[in-house]
Image 1 (cartoon, one colour):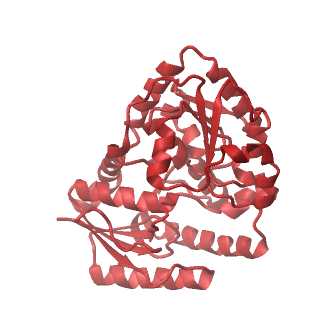
Image 2 (cartoon, helix red, strand yellow):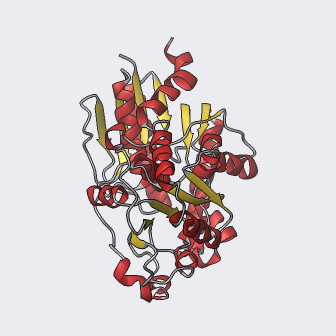
Length: 354
């Protein structure tokens, strides 16, 4: 059995990077690989019997701690001597395959949404980790970008083109056929409450007491001042919810809005279509830039947060909304981790394991 070593985040809170590592690791194991993951975070087990987790002693909170984690992972991987080394985040050492999910989030925030800028200390730390990722890319055999947006960033900031774009996904088991359109239609607005996500501009186009649709808001509050400016919507807010509760909210929704000013990919969008929800998403999100997505009737790509609200209003009265939900569920079959693991196997691993 061929062995694969992954590196990255693994948290019980199911953040985007953790979902990527857990989902891809399990799917690679299902395709016949023995998978070893060298992780940081608070989760030290994986549900798949052929995925083995080695956990760094603590979650890195600073650049020196991240560099110490990278060195630890390198030493562990050298002792293992796997057939394939495949980092999923900013790992500065040699690798066979590298998945690049982002370059510098802080720079993108500074460039596109100054309200969401987290300060120069965080910015400088992010720059150092970005350089670490770039150095690692120069030491990698095959570089994979997770979206066209990440590809654009790599070419613009790193002057490096990925060898291939392979998207992110969800577990096949969570896919659920769509429910009938609700009366009135239900809209879900998921994501951390922060200016980058564009919730305020989106909600300004609606009346909290409207009877034409039901709007649910879900996600933890990262910017209290920003959330306080939307006080009329607080009764619609479910807060930060568990994974199972989030899936329930998707299942009862008809339309999922992603009015973000920028997203490297958008796991929300993939989760939404897996539950048969129509998605309205801005063009700055990596998922929206995939060819099969942009041309699908279940996804509406908009220019900004306000245009996202306008498109959602049109869909609320669209007699074809039910068929669009069916198309969303069909589209989600292309974004399951087993499909994506097979893409990695065929397009990046095959030459290494012959």
